[in-house]
Image 1: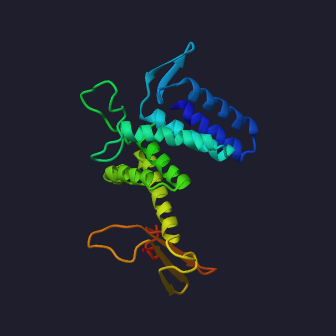
Image 2: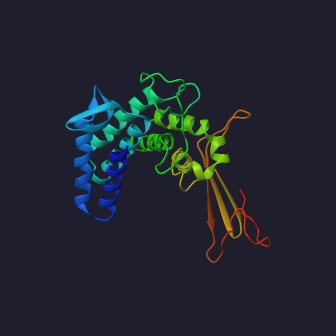
Image 3: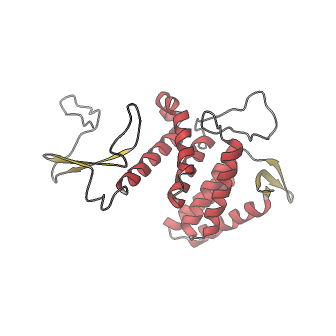
Length: 254
C-alpha cells in the first residue's frame, strides 16, 4: 500500500513538475513490486531479505492500482493500465461485498475472522474503500467499461449515510462521489449528437442561463438517474453560495 502511494506521487509529480527522474523512480518501484511481490496473480504484503510474504489486504490492491494508473498517465505505457485492471479484478472478486456493496479489508479466502470488517474512514492515509471506489471510476473512464462504474456506485450507495454523518472522516469517498457525478455528466453530454451545443433543456433568466443534459428523457416513479446542470453567468455578475454568510444575500439553489 505505501509503495503504491509513493509510486503514484512520484509519477504525478514527475509528470507535472517535468522531472523525468521521479517518473523513472516510480517505474522502477512499480516493476519491482509487480515482479517480486506477487504469487499466482495475488499480491503479497511485505518484502524483506529477498522474500515476499503475507497475503495482501484491500489497501494494498487499491493503492498500488491507483499508483499504476498515475504511472500510466505519466508514461502512456499500456502495461501499467492493464496491471491496474488485473489488480482491481482480484480486488472486486476477493474483497467485494456482493450483497451490500463496498469492500472488506480481508479477502474471502484469507484467514477466517469472527467478523470481516469494512472501514470507510480516512486516517493518516485514505481508506481502502474510498481508494478502491475511485480507482474503479478511473478505470471506467480509461477503458469505457460499465462494470467498474457499477461496482463504484454500489460502494458509494453502501456508505452514503456515513458520508452524510461524517463528511470530514470520509473525504476519499466524497471525492469518489464527485468523480462519479462528473463521469455521469460526461455520459449525459455524450448521449446525443452535438449534445454540448444542444442541451435537453435550456432556461434563460437574466443574468443566468441554465442548461440540463441527461442520458434519459423518461423514468419510472422513484427511479434515479444522473443529469448534468451547467450554469452560464453573464459577465459582470456572480452567484452566491447555497448558504451565504450574509442573510441579505440570495442563496443559489437548483
